[in-house]
Each structure stands twice: as structure tokens, then as C-alpha cells.
Length: 199
Image (cartoon, rainbow, N blue to C red; front, side):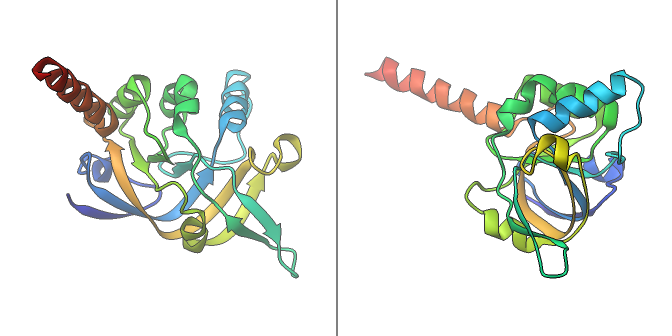
């Protein structure tokens, strides 16, 4: 296990150095993207319309945060825990191939389609501990922008976060075809079969 401290936009050559099981911390731009935002971004792309920001090399955070404005009218993060990434599996691969993010951040891991897209497009997936919403909020230093708030609502819109050493993120999908979650499930099933045979 090796620790990496990455800055967005993350160069592909840096992503290729990382293997499953490594720990990553991100500094720079991380954008919250859940179901509705994925679908809207893909729809705009298919219509040939420009998106409000460039996803290349940044972090995509599967997160529906709780936000509030301070007395100066600036957005502040109250809580920013990861949401289950498996929901995004059906369109995450297409999103990676079109928009080329550097790292996907969420919880629960992702499947074969995302793994294949990460290998083809040089992207990684980092697991952020569920239930650590306040830790995540502490690593978010500024909210420079928000898009689609009125249309999609607080949990589903694009929140742009400026983060400092955001993590720790355990890499469960690397850019070499490795998927720690799938490997673990396969090992569990193999051990289960062996135990049942011995019984």
C-alpha cells in the first residue's frame, strides 16, 4: 500500500502509478455528481450543448450534500458523506469516456463497466468511508460555484468544491483493470464454497 497526494487536474501519468489498495488524498477541484446530474450532463452532450464546467482530470464525488449559506451569503458545507456508487454503474462508463474525470469518489465500489472504462480512459475509483460526512466537510475549504441548483435541487446538482487533502480514499478500481471490490467478492465466494465442501 502506497499513499499518493494528487492535485487536480490529475495527469494520466500520475493515475497510472496507482494500484488497487493504495491510499489517495486529493487537493484541488471535486464536483458532486449524482444520478440526475450524470443524466443531464450526458443529455446536454448528446444535444451538442456546452456544459457549465470541464470535468477533465477532476474528482467526481457521488454525494448529496447538506449545504447552507453563512451570514455573508456564501455557501458552506454542513455534511458531505458519499452515496452508494452502484446506482451510477449504468451510465458511469459513458460519462468517463466522454468527460475524462481523474477520479470517481463514492462508497460501495463499482462494477465491470466502470472498471473497463477506467482502464480504457485512465481513471480511478476511490472509496470514501461511509458515515464520515463531517470529515469530508472539513476537507472542503471553499465552494466556488454551483450549477443546476434550481433545476435539480440541493442533493442532485453540481456543487464545485475546492478541497485540501480530501481523503483518505482507498483505491478499489485502478487504471490497469484492477477492481478490489470484485476481487474480494470472488475470494469470499471461493472460501464459502470451500467451507461448504469441507462440511
